Length: 341
Length: 241
Image (tube, rainbow over all chains, first blue to last red; front, side):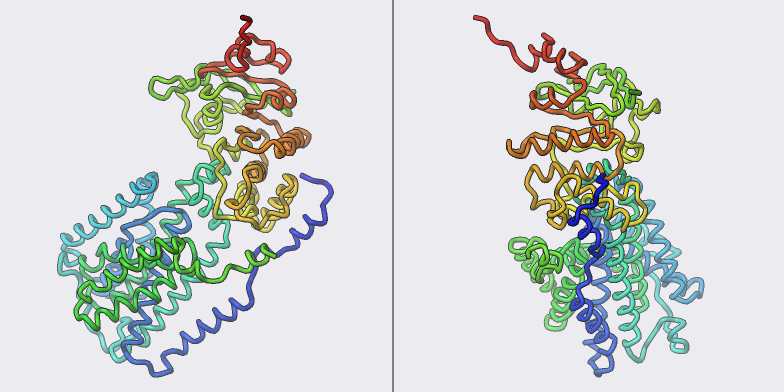
């Protein structure tokens, strides 16, 4: 546009594409290192279990966040991909005698494919209509698996206990530490994946669609195509958590694997933590999952739904006082502080 | 000057309302074409039809002799037609720079190159100091510039601007008008919807006047200002009594 480069333009061009706050990077590094060292502090079995659940739910909420936070589509059926992941690894092991590690990869692939098939027709829907469609499709998956003999119908698949080759069978009976590390690796991996997505060209396009799909379209973005891409990525992040959970409890049944509660829970975690922010699902999971686990201990069974009452109250408080989620309480970013100077 | 855009008998109805009826006109390369008409005349619908946001019932739109009728908006953008919206549509939760980068990514593959291009355009629209401000923090005039910058970042040959001076204070208007003239100097063909008659008469090479979805005049500004139908429909008549 301009032949002469003004000093202020030159200064702007010399700015880095992304700001990296050194302190934040150090904190992230220390936290990750601490999480890897945590099992060496001789924690209780419950502590290991709790941390695992936090990691897994953070990944699941991060998956939901990719769709809702980046492309603006609210899904109420994300349990579909949890269930597919769970059934894929279990089916590969029980029926085909193939290691669950391959089953995890198959679950990721199948979930992505199913997301594409579902996404093509329903991502034309907007807002509530999309949410209702995902809810109903999620329920229909549960019904289909309840009546499908090949996958054990209502009884589901019972994974045979294998004590001889824990790593091949992905079954660790003596200690939960291996499960802890597996879920931690997925937790860290999904965090960096979404972090990269946020800074990629795809991230720019998805955020544009979320904010103003018409304007995005006028800027050369094929809105439907990118929504499907977001849905597929989201599904592929969700699936491995189903696989890990299946290997953890060694039973997969349609009522648990495709439970609508999973879809609602990942939504609640993201909303509480902060939708559209990569930290939101992590914060939300770190708050809500301990509430769920402790209420289960104090009130027995499934916690007599006390956790759901607490969730409800917290969500109401968040919606009234912090609609952008708890993450909005964190001090503003480097860029904003720079701007304020 | 060769014809860049040709619109022939373009029509669109919503129920019983004829938003556009048999609209025909052409846009020459390098010119500024003004579009005028009272509220509800069908000006914004015309833009939506050209850019693929609304499907036409009848008629044809050709860009450099290529039929672009009812083509998807994103493809029309990639063919070199940019647009702004009457009701502003910034990506509110993103910074001005991020908004314009999205536009630049329509043609640029590399993010750094797209960022640098976006900065040049932001400098062109004179908002470089605001580059890290969120779109929701900008004034209406600044958002108009943002939308313009975002559309320019797609490298348009033809730019459709819907009410560039609408809703801004008087002090902001001369800067925006100057910007439109700068676009022309840079070889960009502009079609602009405008309600401010003084501005449209000053900047336009030709003017298309619409009323109730129909074309009532298509001529140079001097003739438009003397056209009885335009005066009657849009400018109003002075009661001699």
